[in-house]
Length: 181
Ligand SMILES: [Zn+2]
Image (cartoon, rainbow, N blue to C red; front, side, top):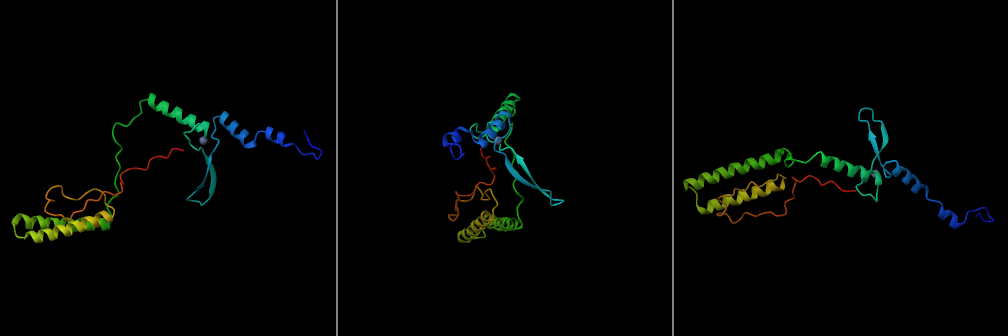
């Protein structure tokens, strides 16, 4: 009921659904994303940019009924069609960098020399231990340069007490887990 000043009462204003809620409901009713994400797309050839709305892709009904529903039906279809991976997806590692190749090469050379000396008995235990220490240092450099996987030989490591095992190495072979929005 209008007040003498011509303004609507607080009760009346509260009774009016928020325009945003109405818009969201209408979008949801029509199976349209209610929280589209605006992305700026740039044409790399012309430099022209345009803003496009893409569905939010939420899996949560409370967040976006349309996207959650679409997600569910997609999953159902995939299940019905028997979509599944028969094998683990192969993640291709990055090719080694120049630096990594250098370290790995040096390590291979030192290791070959150490093994040669060890097999011929031409080196003292002290010499071998020194070479082992060098190899361990090279291992560290290789690890530090980001090459993943262990280059440490499984056999013949007992002669060296200087090898350190790194347990905090970051897994680089794990793809980013898709974030559930
Ligand atoms: Zn959505």
